[in-house]
Length: 236
Image (cartoon, rainbow, N blue to C red; front, side, top):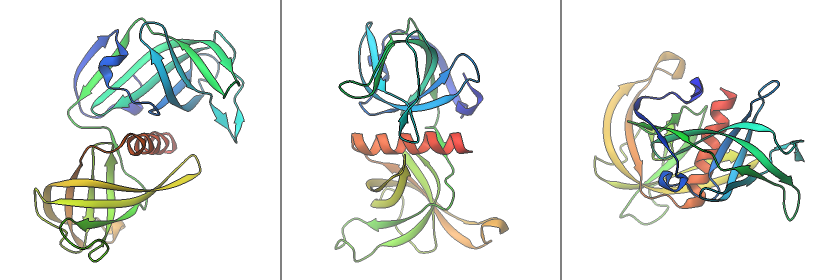
């Protein structure tokens, strides 16, 4: 498995049933060409029929379909919660009708890694707002800096008290994926809180750090988070 997908791991296994991975329609996937310069493309899962085939969106570059021939081989990588999976597949068909998509061969085996923690990235200059539960909406909305982000939660820095462990809050922030800016609003549980001084390159100020766990984010929200995480990894 590629070095870019190596957070703290627990267990590696091989599975032959994609339905056991809790995949979601619209989940972000990475396709890496197994020939030539091994270009990476980012697509979304349209659906799959177990043991038969997988359908994904067609890779685009500058809004134009990337030329891909039937028989092309790709390493396919994705993640779901605390699981990272990878398999090799070939393109059975590439079509622009009724919409641009690739039909991939169903893999014989899938390499799956279960992590102790969800895969997370450190965004550059990502700010947001946190609103405690139980108050009138919009009355108490405190700014935070998002230090790291995963599909399961986030670590944020705040200059003001936003709550205590086990409190419910709403966290809001903007993400841009494929040129599309979305404002996400997620219910989260404060798992831990502590004081720390930031490094000098981050201002050297003392802040309160909060570990937040997202509470069952909707499918489209998870899709946006996955797409953002993959893009951030690729640009890093």
